[in-house]
Length: 319
Image (cartoon, rainbow, N blue to C red; front, side, top):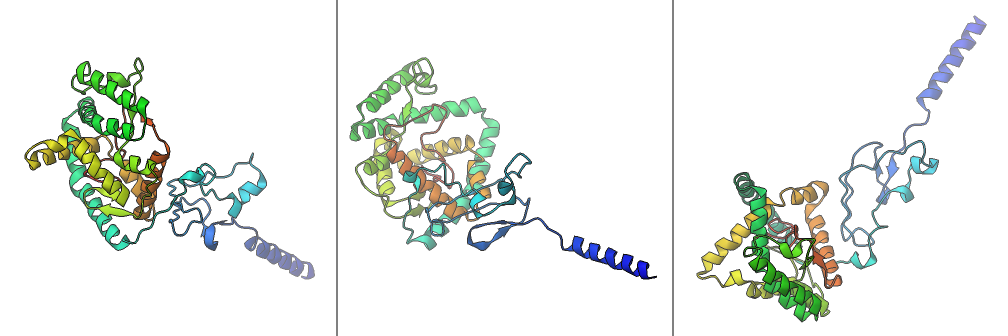
């Protein structure tokens, strides 16, 4: 009986040790919060919360540590959490005042619902009827009509090479490109790529700051500088001179539908990956505009729209 009692006590001690043995440790996050192990998560840092004023959105969980990785990496820790800062240039870490946030959030919601309830269904129906090559040709046609906007802004920025490029592009695409339906100037044989310039970028190149953040109904994210720039773009765009006013409005609406049909899913990906889509779109917009000002004389490929995100709430439904 004595040995039996010792055996039973030893078994109970072993079982208690197993119950209190080491368990998987949650990876610590900023602010002392923890992330359950092997749980997909989306990390979002607002401009006010993050020390570098960045809004970071992740739609995939970090890959699990493998046996070949160092032991310290597998255990996790605050220094091991990927904040996405290493590959972000310091010039992109910009902030913007948002004194109209209640109004801006209301307009963001309006544009968001306009996109999902009206614009996206119409664009999907349009894409189901019109094949993609035809829609790309329509996009090329409107891009060719925007050549005066890019040409004038290249001149205003003293970018003579860019202005010459836009001039020759317009001549080639308007003739052998069949009124701009095709883009032979941007092909590999010629290699004259579009100059991604507008009046907002021109004002920025003169040292004008973005000011504060604005979300306009139908037009989407903007700033006082870019709002003034949109006025200049309007008067340099030949479509704006169609008369009466509802004619150019209808043409611009068709352009928006066509552009949206070629970019369905882009805005949805941004929204689904963000905890607060408003902050994510705000940060993406100001970083993009800052980058465009710094990339003076930058070009874009022939398959890309003139204004990324055109037709989505991220850039507006009226651009």
